[in-house]
Length: 519
Image 1: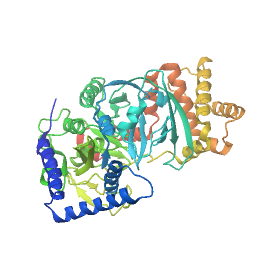
Image 2: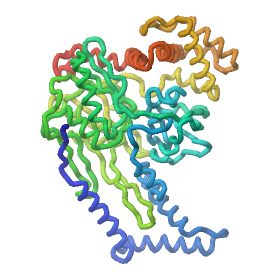
Image 3: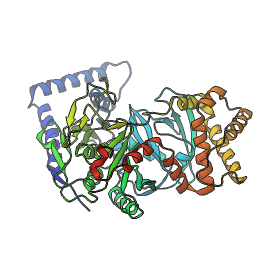
Image 4: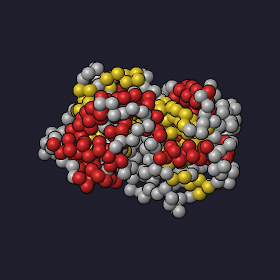
């Protein structure tokens, strides 16, 4: 496998970080006057609280809360105080298989948020969607949780129950209780691989785990053997993962010497450059990369590297903008501090990081975004996230679908159960004879009658406006029941307008660079 060389040493960076901690401690002991004065101020306040507050206080706990408050004042959701318990969870390494509910999540605005459920998992079968905010798990509020804390809560013995409360609609929707049953989950970084009409290979990379590069190579080679002459690399909903895997994947598509990503920090040791060092694996393969508002971290690094180096056309929506790097600094009490120490920068110098909270994010086509020129003379945009070359798809659920789920509220479980039972009954009747069938209008009408009889509160207007959602749910469940998960995946891809747009571009392209001209 190809490997990128790293200009700058991770060990040196870590050593420098520890040196920074040592210098601060030295300053508090009398070296730096301003820092020492600040430490004395904090200690004076703590003494007053300890000795004079109306109720007894736990001094150790007060010091810990002071540390938490100081980090909160940075306004950076990725910088945090990690208790020994949180640190232990963070350091646990996930295997390729585990028992859980199949939820991929990330932290958005302080809440654990679904980036996507794994295909065929309990979470997908329960109807959880990308963008759902997780409010409670087994009665515990999840505000401020880390991704690792959520993953630990999701896991447990096979067959055990997990009670979630979710909010749909960016936190503005109704809170919905969801009950899941844990099951064995096989973690695969690549999903929905297939060859579309015109020799267009398609696959989705759902995460950057320790097997992503290997799986991607195997998938692309298999697609090419099956007749693919171009590929769609779908990174929508990909929350990222291991930086090294993001670098390795970008490295597969680039030529020696081409830059992949770099870091920029306040100290020299935090600056590093990651560049390709070996020939690209598929130099003549036209590539389109799909992104959306849930594409983050390592996935953004891949999209930015291929876009800046004129290697792939990027289609979709502006990405999440998680472009910062964190270091973990251990403390004497067994806890640690996770601290942002650098920003990720694309090969052309674009910062991936969106503005910090309180600053105004830039829209996909905002004319105030800084502009950059690629070697081919194409314009790409900075200002946070990766802005696609061509905007396609919606950045969130369709408005009609959001109204549909908001009106369902606590009847969501009933909707899922009744729609699933309805589709199963139609399959048993022999109504689904091939994988290309379309859901007839009569199914939708009959389902509404059943929902009404079951007491599911859903207006005719809202139901009618969300007809595309209803047809998609019924059609997908019917295909899954009749032909299996593999055919369901093909149907999902076939009905995806953004995928079809990418395929149309690639069908016209006779070379890797022709994708930019639509030839």
